[in-house]
Image 1: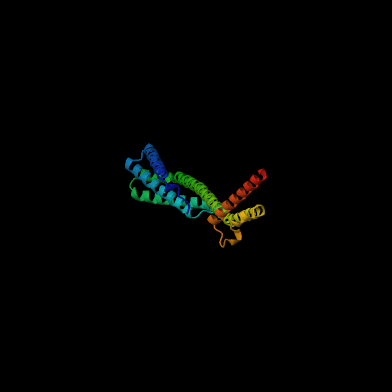
Image 2 (image 1 turned 45 degrees about the vertical axis):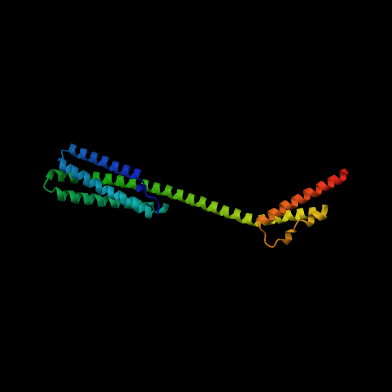
Length: 230
């Protein structure tokens, strides 16, 4: 499941603040139409609380299921259905609560198309923003997993090559040093163990042999230089 836009505290506070502000605007608009304050307050809080709940449901649902590029039409149908359900619930609830106020009932019935348009706009914006958020989050996770897999494969390949090349390199170097020492100074070469005499290649042993061989070659060359001078 992808990370929800409401998973961070900052986004949750922003989401809550926007709905509180919108509810306040809704209340002021109703008061401008001479709707009693208690009815306007109930209408603003109840309507927007239901619509906010619908947007939260949409956000979390898209975290589990998102249609592919060819099925975006389903999102449009989804927005229309949710807007129709919200409008019907708000209409029935408010009429049942304030059935005695004929002026408000008339106002409510006339405002149904406007309420539907507002609900469709809010739900549609929620769907678009959620799709963008989840798409970017999924792309970031895919790139992160790809980079981690490439790094793991690269490290494994380097380790394998290191394990394969290191013993061969040391053995080849020891062979060259051994035969070079044997060619120039057989007695010195006799002091150097042959690489074939090592039963199991170990880095410490091979390194010691390598240093001993280098010392033997250097000492033999020094002896030959001193003999030439004499």
